[in-house]
Figure 1 (cartoon, rainbow, N blue to C red):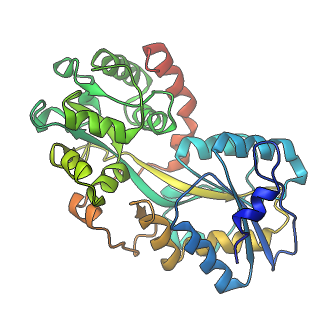
Figure 2: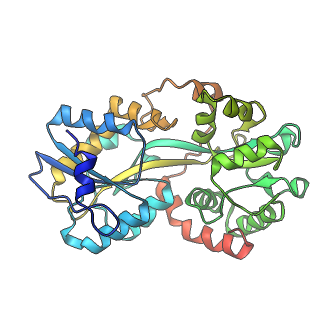
Figure 3: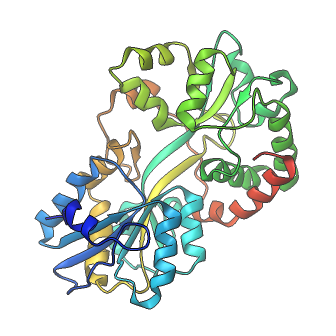
Length: 341
């Protein structure tokens, strides 16, 4: 059974969440999660049913949780850190909080390009291009690189260049095209802005639908969420945009992930490894991915999601995810120099 939220609330500390007591590995597991989806409740509940291990979970923003882990040091009760985005996982790894995990289950289930020695991907999302067919031709936006084409001047919208989703894309561009080409690309994108970056990915899609922009970048699940929405206003947005899987003729569409790792200081290491292995199970993969309109990382697992089915299949970038993590900092420097903020 999961710790009730009322109990967590009663244990308030620096930013409203409290230290969780550590118990024997076979009976308890403490998770710090920056991933907040309602369907995850069933995910954790089923783990307890299968193993008898009680899950204590606290949720907050990534920066808050990482600061908490840093302050707690070797005395941290956290066993697992869960978050979204390659750059955030890389940031946590750079802090030195993750312990290497050797698991035949994880090595067998999760493709090599979607895991590192210390952290593992459990769901995938794609960074897609969304465009307004009244303002932009499909052939103008088939690649990320084309977003810097002067023909799109005044038509490009994105969220902040400092946001992890865009930093991870920048890291991929560096790996595939080199730093010089990526710097030129970033400057070209900035020159093509319809407006200064603002809002989230859903805001970019809505701006494209309204004609404020001709084209935008967004994570696939934001569009899928609108596609699956029963609200007429959301369906109107969907009707006014089209989506592209970028770079199908080259390195493939950029993929990002949700992932997790075991902390070095984890007091319940046995339970922590069991939980990571559980997240790679067929059942957990379905909950974990479909809860946010994403794809599982285990190739044999399929989710029933009308929007994802409608978006169709695509060629994904197969680069090793840890390699992208290595170039996130460089992507930030390139964006800063280009004025992409």
